[in-house]
Length: 187
Image (cartoon, rainbow, N blue to C red; front, side):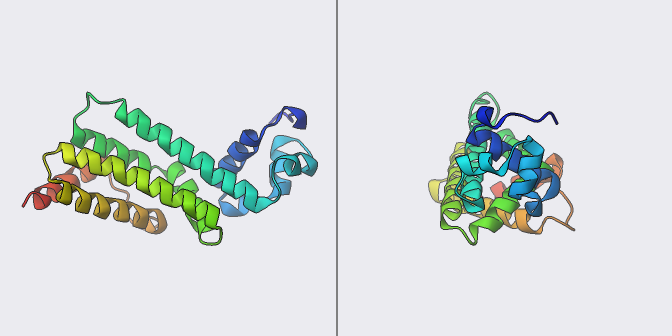
């Protein structure tokens, strides 16, 4: 990577580099010295933007929320797509390897940082609202959609933490599971 001058780096550059390190190397890769090497700058540049590593993680969580919002907005932009197909597209997006790595890291950090935890709660709420609204389009009652949306979001959070060693569902698997859940929710 070509070193960049610190005067040109903004906080988003640091955050994006940190998210890249989480994806490539895991949580342990996010160290101030490692980021400085990656960006070709000094530690002074880091401290110009962030008080400490916790502040960086808080910014990473906020940026992750923005990225998730963009993904959800893209799905809303697919209004011509049938609701069940949108659910599959959202599920497929959320179980991608790069998404899971960052999501797990941010959720792990949220256990010790209340600001990050609040961001994670906001992300979960936004995903829940999208799933709930989409399920209601499938002729479910509001109560049925709310219950099934909760189960799907809880299952997704569980998958984030326990997917290693478990089979990764294919879009076809998700379609079959979705069909069974919707049929059982229609009773």
